[in-house]
Length: 304
Ligand code: ASP
Image (cartoon, rainbow, N blue to C red; front, side):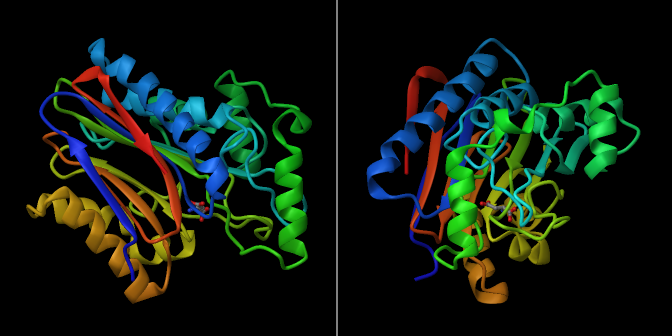
């Protein structure tokens, strides 16, 4: 079975769909993971309901999850082979195709906010490693003390991976797609990457087209899963192009997840928003937490 679960919702007006990563989440922790995603969707929904932009909403949702140590992004992110936190994040504005991204960023509390600063600055799209840290400092962000962002759970996951008890990827990457009242879409994704990754490894999350993509003419997507597969397939771009060609959002999500399995043997999940605000999710992993809201703050839902 290549696709294990799907969900669709949304509609006319504003909408937001958030994910908290595809992977294995023990059954007893799934409701807590879903609850974090509902709260993040609510944070984005507050922005959208007040007439804010899809880009601001997606960023607000992702920042909340970066602060939550249960997810593999920002605080609590996965550690590399040296036990270091190196963070990847990107976001894209479907209205203008403006984008910002950072990869292998040393500890800063909100990598997605640094990516947003890169988008705003506009000179370059993607900053890496020490150069990304330098850009962040120039943009006014304070580096975080590593011990405030590295959690015991992340250390334990690295140890388990070193001892061969765990797969080589984490789950818990976070992302959001949104459509605002003006009809614009945006996507944002943030991660610590795979557990025990080689120092310098960069995944799909900060790469436009692979882990994140947004275009008002097509829709917006954020992926989570085995990043090397998403990179090789340009998975989020493919999903958006399928939307642009008139595929139903759910079909576009399912076909992308199926293609990841069949063409590059990768598992994971994807969330999409179509230009009209319809939302869809598909995953091939055992679990993937998500939260969504559209049209009214009462319309808040989620799962795992
Ligand atoms: N896609 C992320 C990466 O490969 C990992 C994940 O989604 O859990 O860096």
